[in-house]
Structure formats: structure tokens, C-alpha cells
Length: 241
Ligand code: FPP
Image (cartoon, rainbow, N blue to C red; front, side):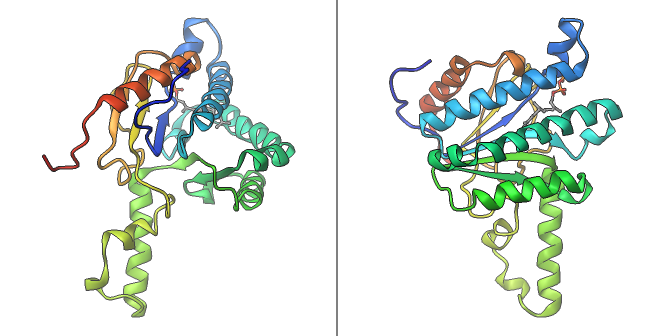
């Protein structure tokens, strides 16, 4: 783990928590055990990144495509969210002290209403926190996010509240789940896969990508240090020279 600050720290780090299933398979365990370990890694890395001073963190926990997994696996993942939310509610005072704001990105309409109600309570209770913005993407899809922004704009144009000429990038951004947050600077994907998988399509327009073969449950603070070191050494030109 690092003992010196990084020269340039990303403002927004996004993580695709991949490899839980393979981690479990390697050990002859059910896939749900991989997700249990993955959820522990999420807590550990989230805490470490926040302590390093990263202000915005987004973890991909469940995609719009993940519903096609076996029912037992979906249930296991949803139950991990429930545990985490119960814990977040118990820990509210501590999180307030740390200044952690929790937000859920995604379409909540398909999620169990009891879970949604917990999500809403935690989001509401941490709304004023400003030190760390911790996003968890649940039933999230990048195309779906852009689609619902387009529908919202179309409704405003239809009602006369907006004219087509007035539509700017900001008009779209303020309708995304990440409204008000900076774009992703660094995207981390462990487990040897090198694709975006419909994650934060708009927000990753200029993100630096960092991949690793480590499976998510095995991901350590030292791995995050490596990603941040690589990020600090990159030259970001945003299309310029
Ligand atoms: C991808 O690995 C992982 C998921 C679809 C689920 C991720 C969920 C968690 C880590 C639990 C999160 C919990 C909280 C509290 C946020 P995979 O199963 O696709 O792995 P594989 O590619 O090896 O099969």
C-alpha cells in the first residue's frame, strides 16, 4: 500500500467488479461465494480509495443484462445488496463523519420494492455528504441510461419546455444517473477482460483504461496503487496535442 501521495489523483474512478464466478469455480465453490468475497473486496477497496482522497467512485454491481443469470445467483447478489444497505443504515453516523454520500445508478423499477426503499432511505440520509461520492450501479446499462435521457429530452421538446436548438451536452448530462458528477478519469477492470460492457458509456468518453488479470475477490490495495500509478504516468490530451 502506498505511503506517498500520487502526483495526480483521478477525480472519478470506476470499477467493473469482474471475476467473482471464476474465483469461486477455481475453488470448487458455488458462484455466490465469489460474489460474497467480491462484496468484501468492494468494501475494502472503496474504503481505501476514499481514504486516498478519490472523490467519486463508481462500482458496477449488477447490469441490465445480469437478470439472465440463474435465479439463485441473482437472488444471492440482491441479498448481498440488502446486507450492505442494512449495514449502511446501522453505520449512518460513522459514514456521515467520513462524509460518504451513497448513490445507486440504474433503473430501480425492476428491483424488489423493499430493496428500493432501503436504497432511497440511504441515499436520502447521506444526501448532504460531500467528501466521497460512492456510486453503486445496480440494474445499470449505459445504453438504457442514454435512452432514458433522450426520452426525457423528447418529452420536454414535445411540451415546449425545450427547443431542439437548445439541446447541448449539458442537457444530456443533467439527465444521466451521474448528473452533477465529473466524467470518469480512470476505469479499472480486473479478471483479464478488456471491454466496457455497457458501463458508463457517456461518462467514459475520455477515461483512461487499466486492466489486470487479478480476479476481483483477490484485488488488493496494492492493485489499486498500481492502477493509480499507471494513471498518474499517462498523458491525457482529450483529443488535443
Ligand atoms: C461479475 O463477475 C460480477 C457480478 C455480476 C456481480 C458483482 C456483485 C458483487 C461483487 C456484490 C456487490 C455487493 C455490493 C454490496 C455492492 P462474474 O460473476 O461475471 O465473474 P465471472 O466472469 O468470473 O463469471
